[in-house]
Length: 235
Ligand SMILES: C[S@@+](CC[C@H](N)C(=O)[O-])C[C@H]1O[C@@H](n2cnc3c(N)ncnc32)[C@H](O)[C@@H]1O
Image (cartoon, rainbow, N blue to C red; front, top):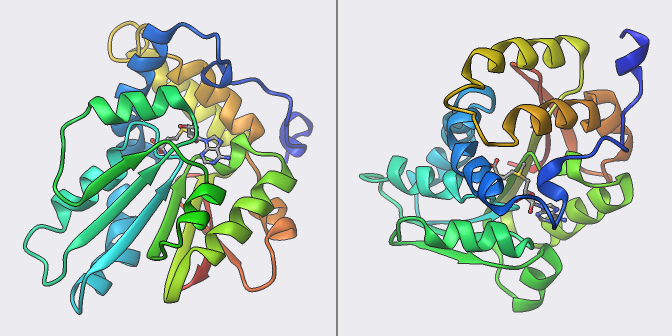
């Protein structure tokens, strides 16, 4: 990998992580997560692989950690309509601004949104069949990421699966995101942090090898397309 991307840039700053950032731009950013994820994060593939098979034989308790605007659990509830089993989803985010934004969205039967971190969820005693996160690991230091993985392992019911999905850092991913978002910056992405935070995210994110080096025993790391990586336990 070329030098500039050979090392994770843990100091790259995302505007959304600044508690003092413009709240209007932040809300517009949350509002665009669903659209951006549909292009870069293949959320439906995650549903098909890890959730839909379980719904054929029963109900699924889903935990989405760092839910942001709550798009993923809402989409899962839509996709699961007509399945044999029902989804009961808990969507958590420790950031009060994300919690407030997600709570303003459409109410959905089977969805609870809470301002909590994983330690707080553990303390409730509730356990889950599927624990997921998307684009959370790169926000965390290695120590914090390992703690999140450890806590999500403890949040699983017997037979459950945890899947933490993120960007895989590469120069190509950075270039593709820079070029791909440029035409949309004047309208769809106007007054959001999507482009600048997305580019910082890619610099902050881990390669599959770097993620493999920190995951606790029992976890495996899978590569995906485009520029995706996921840490999986169970399943
Ligand atoms: C880039 S957003 C992704 C939101 C959502 N998962 C999505 O894909 O649209 C990252 C989210 O992770 C949350 N977050 C940051 N640190 C976290 C932590 N230690 N535990 C759980 N969530 C965290 C942030 O508040 C933010 O909402």
